[in-house]
Image 1 (spheres, rainbow, N blue to C red):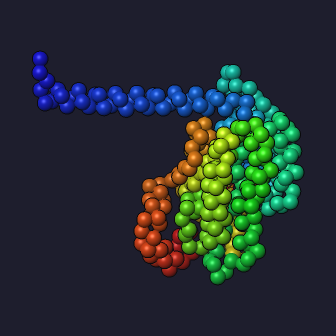
Image 2 (cartoon, rainbow, N blue to C red; image 1 turned 45 degrees about the vertical axis):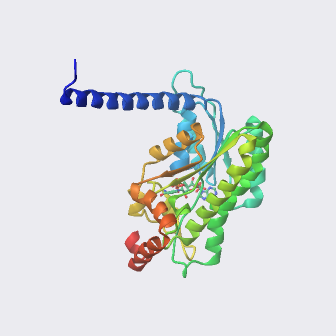
Length: 313
Ligand SMILES: NC(=O)c1ccc[n+]([C@@H]2O[C@H](COP(=O)([O-])OP(=O)(O)OC[C@H]3O[C@@H](n4cnc5c(N)ncnc54)[C@H](OP(=O)(O)O)[C@@H]3O)[C@@H](O)[C@H]2O)c1
């Protein structure tokens, strides 16, 4: 019996949707399995007192990980710890008591000792999430050197020192995963964010070099570059003169949810992804425009700068 054109179309459509459905199911199952493999892993998270870091702590804890919460505000870390311990975990998932290690990423001299403290808790660290960070709103002309240095220390050197202190243990165990929360602004620079963009570009370069060097030691490195996320980041951002912005910008308020971003972070660790860009199509496309048509990108950014800092929020 031969198929009519209409029947052939129906069969082809069913085959396509059937295959897509199977692919989706396969992806779901493998993702679930990979996540289940994270059970009992020791995960150190910086910036765990709010936003993305706090949500990451929740997701890793729910998977049965031994989380170590780090940031400056001990009281907020204790709040997060308490909230984690109140969570009801799925059957078979161990509830490991979270640990709190207050640290300041700007105090580079103290970080090796904080890393030692963290390593001593379980004897090793499986996953290091370099997430703590701070932003800036200020023109190049108005941003003083001390603000550039502060942001570079917190976002770049703080993560670098902590990573260097934990790396030897990962190398000797021949396993580990290091993830850096960078930003789309680590791939493209925008006006009035020079200090922040520079610190995130530095982070991207450092972790790209690291990835290549530690591959032979079976250590994975992920750089996650998200677009705007709905967190307190703009509230704590500095102005060029060092004063605090203390304002929820609409770009931040309308950004991705921390639940979505934390889920992608856990996914990136589970799948050992090297480089992840998260956000709307236009932000991802801007990275390609910067690489392929730099003059077009510079022209667009000059137009944006002309509108002024307030216009872009
Ligand atoms: N929100 C966005 O639109 C966006 C977009 C792209 C990338 N990111 C990146 O995402 C990461 C997390 O930020 P978030 O959006 O979740 O903002 P957030 O809610 O303000 O969280 C920032 C975290 O960093 C910690 N932190 C800040 N300065 C620190 C220091 N000197 N030492 C140690 N910890 C410090 C803060 O804790 P303490 O104040 O307690 O120290 C807080 O836990 C940052 O690296 C940020 O650059 C954010």
